[in-house]
Image (cartoon, rainbow, N blue to C red; front, side, top):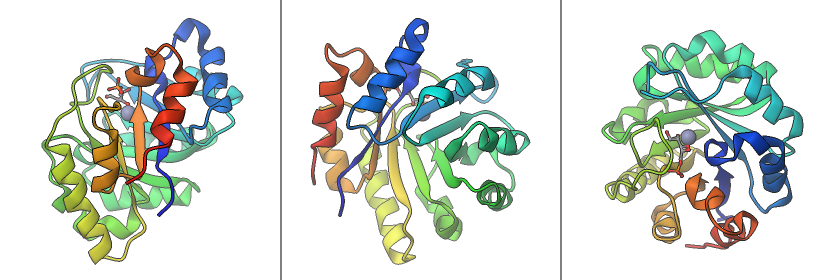
Length: 219
Ligand code: DX5
Ligand code: ZN
């Protein structure tokens, strides 16, 4: 087992100093830039859209992990490929034909991601787990940064890990929402491969050091 991947969420960055914050992530031990796109329909909040993702993309030196919290994500798969997304994550709850959506993401040369809301069972992914590179387990209700971690997430990580092992898949388990030093170790022990962290990184006194400490966590 390798080390846990860290994906700082730029939702918690200072948008007036976005280039500075992207470069902080570039120079840190983080693995991915996590980019949250919200449409005000699938979730109650609107974050930022393509021009901002383009600006991030121009400065980012690590893979872009784009988390779409939008309805009908199929409409924008090619757009995000052109913007430089490496991982494109859609919500299970937003896709009527998830398998088709995953094929479209792979056809554009990106890694496939599927996010599950806290109420959505991991069992629903059993039949397409081979087609998913990253499952993003939401450990808060999507839409806002800075919310409290939902404790049932540990069970979901273990159940999902069992499915991945049973199906001999190579899917990574990503945790998104309320991640901090309070829960990171237990998450990694349960089987998490990628930790997204917004507020915990960007609101800390020394974000680079905070990323380094998360990165050092082992099972
Ligand atoms: C929430 C987003 C998260 C968010 C996490 O809907 O998907 O990526 O930025 O922020 P924190 O780490 O502050 O909970
Ligand atoms: Zn996210």
